[in-house]
Amino acid sequence: MTKILALSQLKAAGACAGALRRFTAAFGESTPVTLALACKHAARFSWDWAADNLLPAPARAEYDQDRERAQGEYKTAIAPARAYYATVVKLAEAEYEKAHARERAEYDKITAQAWVEYKRAVAPARVEYDQAVTQALVEHRRPKYEHASAPVWVERRKARVGAWVEYDRAVAPARAEYARAVTQALVEYRQACARAWATLYTKEGI
Figure 1 (cartoon, one colour):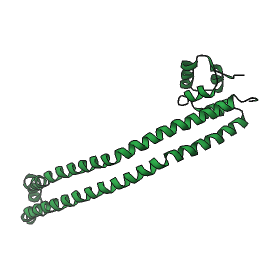
Figure 2: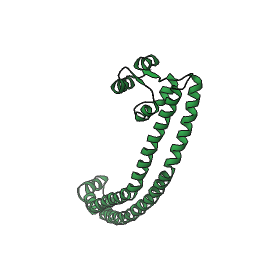
Figure 3: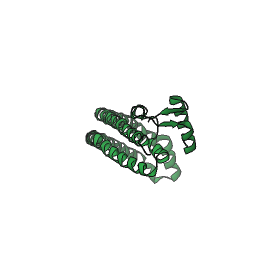
């Protein structure tokens, strides 16, 4: 005998407005429950909620066991892609840090020289009053330092952007493969939960 799931059951169980709208859009007031139908709509509904609210306690325990098994299969399915992605990211990060270290060293070297020149320029003013030093700093000296370091700062920014582009290019294929593996495994996990719920919901005596 085919078992029916009605909209009124979901309302009585406290289903959210979104779930009620999705059920009504797909089935109207009610629908026969089959494994094929549950798998078809596996991504549209929360099977954990359905198990907690539409199954009796013994069946919920069975569902939990099936779900745990499906979770294990999900983790196993994505493990290779996850490990590969982590390895690629680690290597790409090392290359990024290496490139960043090189341009940082060059930047520090050039700005250090500019700072030396700046301090040499203001040295005579140090024997004068604080006002003279301040005036020299504002009007004459600091712009010289900033002028010397500005092109270096621009180049540093360019180098960092370039290093990041290379990093992103290096990890992109592994990221895409990991995303594909996760998506596929998630589809299979949701279908497993849907099958488990439908099997228990339609089981004789429940």
